[in-house]
Length: 355
Image 1 (cartoon, one colour):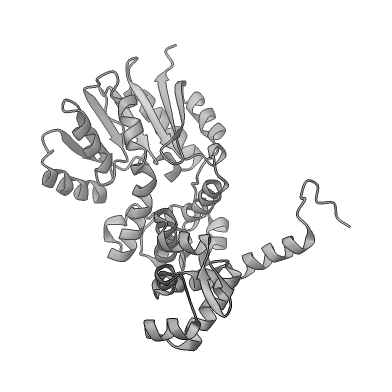
Image 2: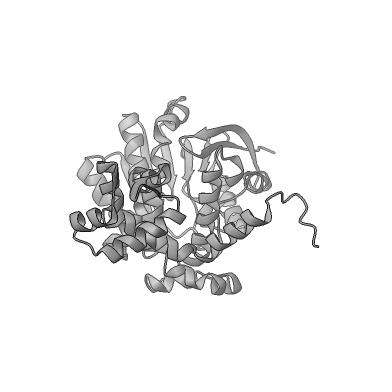
């Protein structure tokens, strides 16, 4: 018999886990239906109920409620006692946990159809699943053109994790009273606005694709910060593009995971060229090897597949040592590392190595 080394899982559990994988897309839809049709909400509000009661109260067929709740048993979202169904902790997370719901909506609206093209994407090195959303080379080019539901799920996912970092990041960034900050990949300006509100003296420039900066300018003007936040349209993958100089801080948040390792090195070299000895270069990322909880690592590994099939076909959520190597190769020294910022982030401060 084959030796599986350190795999200590017994055969029965291994078989069960294999079936969970085999039926995962089907059972995902069952979980989503239990949430969206109000069945989990009804159980939460009423503690327990029969199939017939739920069907009557929610105006659903007994058949429909029955098959969903029976799937819910195997999903361990509900349990059965004296012919009545009750909600489990897992069912509660599916119903009420914000992160879980954002992840589920992102999976459904952005990724579900696209993941049918994962194998093509691996073979071709292109986001072959993106065709399910639109005709663009990368998802970033088409963000402003996505259908509203898809766009909402994308931005909810993108913003959720970074928003938790803001309270911890601001004192670190503004401890030395920087006068200027370059937000590379600043998207719709959410972080730039937070910086402008935190420090009344700092001036910020957002660097991003035209689609994102167009939206950012509108949001910034509505917030009344157009006198302190500028935008610059740029495609950083264009070899002729350069990063503007004379900033106290260059900032990249959840940005480098949008690029391949070779592209990251090029971006870092452009950043190096834009810096002087006093410039601080900050990188905020979710590294899968530095997570406190297995749920976070699992989520990041799944997110890497989104980058493969949908976003750009060549990037991922990275291991920290891979990025540290690129940082050093590009000519930087790591000045500070702050782990477990917010929910799952690491903040790396770099300085230019002066030779």
